[in-house]
Image 1: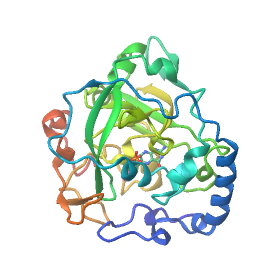
Image 2: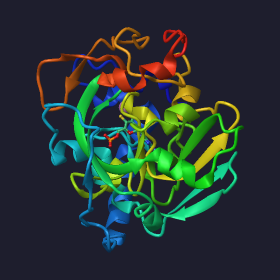
Image 3: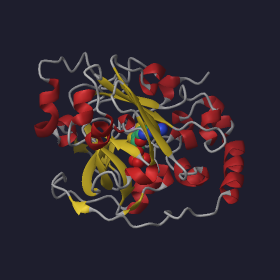
Image 4: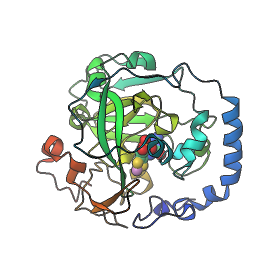
Length: 315
Ligand SMILES: Nc1nc2c(c(=O)[nH]1)N[C@H]1C(S)=C(S)[C@@H](COP(=O)(O)O)O[C@H]1N2
Ligand SMILES: [Mo]
């Protein structure tokens, strides 16, 4: 079995692939890459949306005057373990992901459960461009111009009942398209969860694009969650199912290492990861570290959600 404690390594220095990758996966890297390359060649047919521009309206939810990370940085420094655990693996391997046809099942504690075709989701609500900070639990960060719409718009469509206290998100887990899913890195499929009030917060969006274009596969095409005040791993990629639940769902990272990754996962410079500090971060492309902000800088918008909660206990 892989040693989960080696995943998400201390980020104060550059991380070696041999450190962050479980042994089994590391040994299989060559085979994995060869398989990935073959599959990629077989699926070179571009989807009609491959390079599509998205029509967006401006948004009031933008970070201030911080510089955007480049398209190259945002699409070549990824965590998407279904396509490998090195930062450049997803860019290399995710060409095999087929994003059409694509359905998102929304079910559970709601009056109108529904299966949405991805193209109907693109028309569900006006698309906005939102410049958000993304803070990874590994203590690096980026500034990304996402294109998406509020998660609340989708949830309203299915009319949650009073029993809907939590929302669970499930990513695709298809061995045929995702070489990493053959490795026991996480308990696939990747799942994540939010409390219903977090999910309804206007900052939480479903992203379908970045830099005005359809989302590249390695960033979670065709639709992924963005919860900017939480560590990046909350933002499940390539979502196929959303369930409204009465009880708090399990999450993939919490199952893998519960003492390291909690359900809430709010960005908090005062609560360290057991193996490294969360007080500062390195913006990708920069050399000096910067201070990590409470709730990733979104405290005004979201601190109220956690009034009276001990954030050391509910990490
Ligand atoms: N399905 C799935 N979703 C995922 C991940 C993953 O491995 N699989 N990685 C998470 C982590 S740790 C981060 S930091 C962000 C990275 O998103 P980005 O590659 O678009 O920057 O995706 C999150 N969503
Ligand atoms: Mo992350």
